[in-house]
Length: 313
Image (tube, helix red, strand yellow):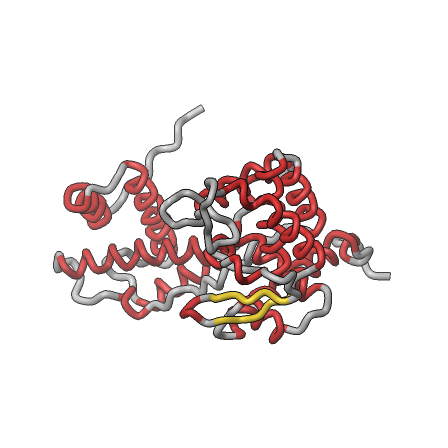
């Protein structure tokens, strides 16, 4: 079987790739990726009887539209556009062209990635896995998770909670968030029970006669459990719960709090206040998560969705 000959780049592209290697120290993988992108562009232009030296903005827009037509993701299209912009700026700087046709091209809208969310059942498994550790460590971790899931705190807000925030078995948690803004968040019964149990064990985290103003004290520099340590403990709990640790982070539980509230009928404004978002547009991302879940539900389970390709009637 004959080997397919390697693609022959025009000399302008060869010069561009040589510049990337010599002046920018581009790696072998980067050069291969740029070469492949430029080969694809050259092939498209050749079919339109144009070249990299004669192509105008209209031709380049048509190329980007063709990438979208074949199903390329906006992020990949944006990467191709970045390569094109660098290439045509190079041609202009080297006086191989008198203009830069890529300068007027618009970047594709990437959109905002949807937050990762755990199911209610997975959150329950996570908390139960935390409880299986020894009494003190398990009690602390279970309390951290119960509060995080019940109140949707940022991890920095969670680990630095003052002891005063939970005194007298509160039904509401006073949280000091970004910009020193305070907000009240209701606590669930399981979270309140976990806090009460933890307060009976908390003294074991302190040396004899030592006091701490933090709910989760530590002998480290900050005086409280660090974000990094909590994230590490969370990964361990995920393993114990049979959940891929890559899917679990403190922020994922904050996402779960918001998404599960909205799925249960909570209004967007209330969720915004509990999360401490300054702008409701930030909170609206969770409605997109629900839309996506509903769309998947219909595609996977609705009888009409499973009749793809069948003739009507």
